[in-house]
Image (cartoon, rainbow, N blue to C red; front, side):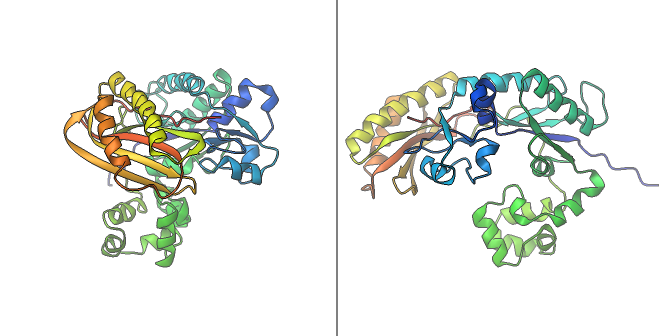
Length: 360
């Protein structure tokens, strides 16, 4: 008799409408109402939306103007990132009561490897249920969870019974689960890739599975091998407690569109100061500077330059940013500017959580 294969037990915890839920928890007047964190009815971008707002089509990353159009009764709330970090810290302490193999993806979601756990409980499903119950009782918020043999399937599963639910995909169910899954729900398959797959006759997991490795590599390059393997339940990425920082960034959305490069330089100076503080705090430097520009029509442009040496100093960053700013003429007025530093001096730094700033 062949030995039973050993599988990892991975939980993906995802807080339900985290930012908006924190606001509703702290302010009872907002409970049961359509809430958008960030943005305004005139400016800005929605950072998070309550489930009451989502019913009207309000989602993160849409403009405040569009959110107001979709839901005239929506209430805009200014984001309080310090408060979100405080709550997130409490939640992560709960995670670490079960395992030290916790990989944070953001303030509101994380992977947990509970194959070997501190509770000695062999059931990952029961552990997920207990963790969610503790978050509700000790923090006051609901969370959803996905449980399976790898991060890819667990991530997809956590979205199935939202909000305040969980789904387990057992080892013998993984392939059937993925075969029936609409291709747009595959984690890592965005809108553009989804459309391309549709054009190639790929609508579900089984359609993807029926394509050869050669076919997928031909049409999707290096990503082809990823798609080929994950649809077969093969995803060997480990839960890494210290995620690799690939870039550090700071950006700002403005109340009034900027049309003068001189005014833009003033704003970029302030953004560079914020970036320098983050770099110094985490002892990070980098070689590649990228200027991000979002125009009034919401189109986006990036301009980059790689230096021959590592930098973290604001003045050196601004020298390059100014060069990038004047590299070509602006095609329109600007609503957002950002600076990021990549090609960093370390591959093992702890993840730096960088939040988008909003003005009101």
